[in-house]
Image 1 (tube, rainbow, N blue to C red):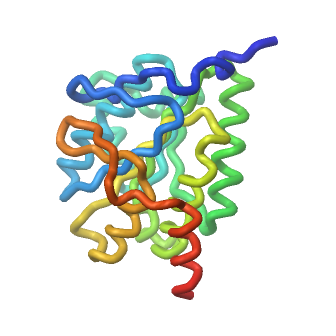
Image 2: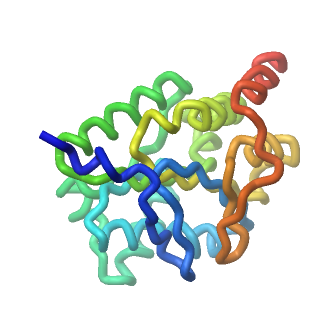
Length: 206
């Protein structure tokens, strides 16, 4: 029996702010300053997915997850109910890139089985500062995800607070994303590099 996943790759998906759309399979970076700029993107992104009946996953620190719950509540969306129903999955992240890959694979497979067309994924890099992993391992995961993202029916938004990370980390994070959000515009990232190249560079720094 055909799955709704079978013909969704590259479908146009509204991100929830402005008139910005992306495609299933895209790997998007968003670089911001402070929680207001973060939630101006993350909040509408998740709210749009919940309203459209999509499976939404957010990897973040517990503090960010709590703020997201409150943000959604102001819009009349109950995050706790969505979590209980399985539509919203809030997770603090895992320690290694292999663990994260297994998590993504499991969630995506379960979403297929449950009839979701794709997974609307968001990750805020602040989870790496909450003791779940190291910043270097987080960067390896971003590069690995960029390499294998075509294996999954996922739309991925990754956020980085410029006030929390140094220039070297920000540049490596930028290089791992083919697309970036600038204001209310989604643009091709001229700094994007091959994930194999970035993974090799990160390994050589150990």
